[in-house]
Image 1: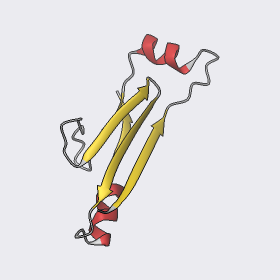
Image 2: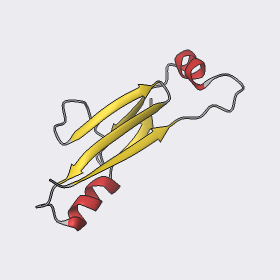
Image 3: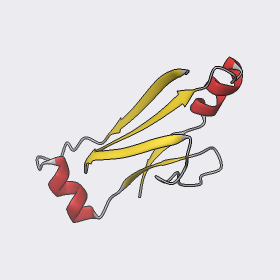
Image 4: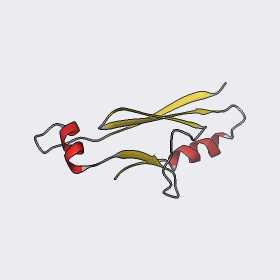
Amino acid sequence: AGSSVTLSCQLYSYTGVSCDDWIRSEGIQLFWVNQAGVKLTISDSRYQISDPGLCIITLTTTLLNEDDNRESSQDLSHIYCQEF
């Protein structure tokens, strides 16, 4: 088995209202996208995506032993958190 890597993305509100209330009122959603801008979904077998709250999402992947280290780190460097 390889090493597990978890990325987190958290949105903060500085408007004086809670982040959860602000994100609901603005209809904002956080998600992960790849380099091409394609949204990663729960069905993507290499990634485990969870959203423990409205203002935070996590993405976990396992770097496989047979993966070339450079390719693996490049793969992760092109994953972005976006709001919509």
